[in-house]
Length: 407
Ligand SMILES: Cc1cc2nc3c(=O)[nH]c(=O)nc-3n(C[C@H](O)[C@H](O)[C@H](O)COP(=O)(O)OP(=O)(O)OC[C@H]3O[C@@H](n4cnc5c(N)ncnc54)[C@H](O)[C@@H]3O)c2cc1C
Image (cartoon, rainbow, N blue to C red; front, side, top):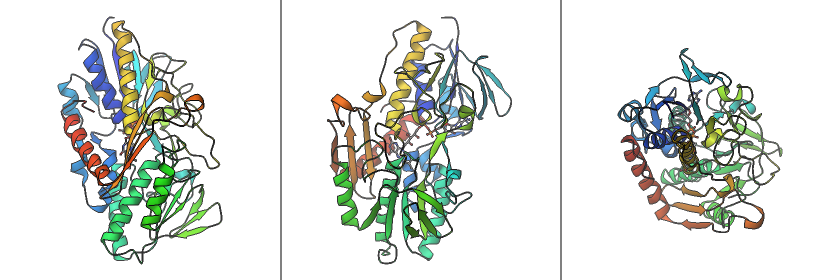
């Protein structure tokens, strides 16, 4: 095919992976342009440690431009503000128009704090660790908490999907409370939209329910699944059940939706702002548009009483991005495309607990029916889980900084 241009929106797990993978597969006559308002990649999985001073920003971020320069990929450090599907053009907030032959969407979630009164660090009373700035604020609030400790509430709100993050933050918080000798004054409660503990928005992974309940019992954490938050005031979380949870420190993962530029483009997204894709991670109505990661629409495998989304982990995101990049390259090079149905996605998830943790591994995490509830699920609890997360962090950051995909 004559020279093409692929525009990639977002440069995190989805976008960076797609850009590097595509560059491996198409020669330099084919232009790749990555657009992201963030100049640095943030290794989001480590943000659970930032509030406790175990990491700082420089440990978990690295600049994107040098990686792209080396790979002959153009990096536009700006947000996409408008997408014209008919005209195949993206316009950035700064007014640059980028025509494309292929568009890849990896813009992740919009953190929809406004859906719950009083939620979130900016206009509300709860902390978040969903991005670097929020994790830094959560760290400043933690320092204040240590001066005047009291009850702690951690969880995931209704409409949230990143359950693993709230469990990890919970277990790390508990670990820090114990280290500081504050267990008597700082009881910890976990609230979640999941119908049961360890459900993760997936119907559970192996024996995850029993494992989480065991952890909670041993650590004396009260778990309140099926929780829906009515509102948050300066020192209390009011649940739809009528229960009021006082807190001195709270971190709640908010509901997720798609980012505005995607949600506001007619014909691109579902009502939540997420992009529908087929088995090739391609938009069903616009074959030149691909998407991966948190930006895509995935129907929850089960109905739950309180709305609970499907987690799209970093590892799932990268798998999807690789398939999408492979398929864009196949279009460009007239090669063979590949398919990976959503219900064949596997997940490896490490829940860190500060000095211990649990590793979950499951194939076909979204499968139901004949294949049942991911029959090949495995779990392993112990200090090796914490070490696995440390190793993953080190390998991921050092290889991606060099523009290499090794995991
Ligand atoms: C605290 C926490 C811990 C986690 N731990 C783990 C873990 O241990 N293991 C794991 O596998 N997963 C983990 N996850 C999940 C993982 O972080 C996500 O799966 C991953 O970040 C999704 O990648 P993404 O590229 O789809 O979206 P994101 O990482 O959210 O990236 C979206 C990118 O799009 C950019 N963007 C947004 N709007 C625009 C726009 N208009 N134009 C251009 N660019 C735009 C953003 O700046 C951002 O760089 C964790 C998540 C959290 C919050």
